[in-house]
Each structure stands twice: as structure tokens, then as C-alpha cells.
Image 1 (cartoon, helix red, strand yellow):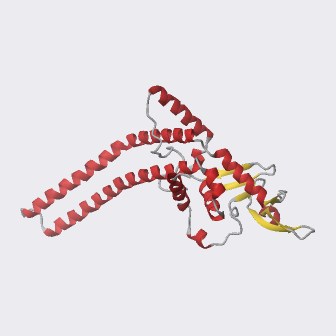
Image 2: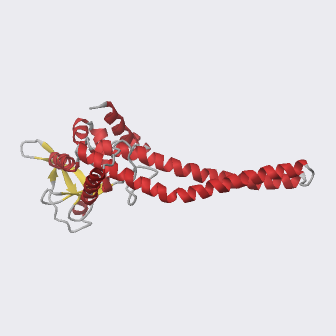
Length: 277
């Protein structure tokens, strides 16, 4: 695996680690992530012994097991559920070409968003400069004896608070989108290599992969898998968004525009800019 991909994978997985996961002992890496597709309750683990004394671990619906629901979902061998999740990753992994197209489209959307916010940033910067000028004039008035020391301190504190607030808003704006660029680049790197990453991962990292990608995984009676994605993977895996990226890339090629595959930002809607998931 290329070194840059490895770092991207680690960045995404590290973002989903928590103190609870660091201390809690889990029976299986899918426990807490998989749900019954029939009633929506969690799947829990049980062990069944055959007449030869061999023990087989199963996932069973907690709703049916506890009598909470009228679910009729049959028990599933854990290894069968594991294979279903692996096949689902094979289905959603994007090709290098799609990764580049998504990156280019997202970057173009990001540039448009930034252009629309340029006026607000310009206004904040102008206000900050005006306050700096007001502070200097206040000092000059104090030195000339026109402003007493107590009024000077009061006004200086007021100006400092206003400048601090403006500076915080400007820095937060830049930091937020810089973080979005890095996080989404990492996410695309993982999405383009998830099959090999998941295949090689130990149980702890498989758990982190699943938590990074999915809020919940539903296992249907017929073996189909239905998921609720975590951000930003819901948008990145959406077929309509991918089709939009393909169309954008085709139009960009016609116009002779250069796609930037290394700089990746948010699809304007549906993503958390400050944190991955």
C-alpha cells in the first residue's frame, strides 16, 4: 500500500477513536454496528452447540430475543455477516478515476463557496482595520491630554474585545475549510482503497473502519445489506453525486480545464466541515 494512502487511512481511523473504544472489551468487531433489517433492533451474539458439541457463534435479533418486538428474523452465522460486509465494501469502493473526478468536483464546489463568502471576509477584515485605526487615534488623544487614563482603558478593552472576536471568526473560517480539505482528502483515499485496507485490518481496525463509514448496518433476511452512512461517506458514496462528478469532469475536459485531484473539500450540502463523522 502506498505510504500516502496509509497515512490517509490512519487519519480517518484516528478521528473515530474514543476513550470508550480504548477501554471497552468487545465480543466482536461488528457488535454495536449491525442491526436487524426487519425490525431495526441491534443484532447480538449468541453461541449455539450442535449435537456433536461444536459451538457456532450467531447474530440474533435483540428484539426477537427479548420479546420486545414481534420480529421473526432467523439467526445468522457471524462469519456469513462478516462476508456480507466485505462484499459491501467491494461494491462501494471507488476507482482511481472516480476518486479524481470526485476530488475535482468537490474542489470546484469549494471554490464557488469560498467566492461567495469573500465579501463577508472582506467586511470582517475592513472592520478589524477600522478598529485598529480607532485604537491608535485613542492613544494619540490620550497622549495629547484629551482622554483620561480610566476612559482610555475602558475604550481600549472594548476595542480589544471586538478585534479579538473578529480575528477569531476569520481564523475559524480558514481553519474550518482547511480542515475540511484535509479530512475529505483522507476520506477519499480510504474510500479508494477500502477493500484491501479492510482485508488486511485486524479486528480493532475493522471496527474503526465500520464506525468511520457507517452509523448503522442493517442485515436483511435475504442477505441484502442496507446502511446509514456517517459523514462524509454518505455523499461520497451517493450514486447521484458520483454521476454529477463524472458529468462535471466531462464538461471540464471539453473546456480544457485542469482537474485538481489532490485538493479535496466538502460537497456543500450534507457534510460536517469541522470533523469527519
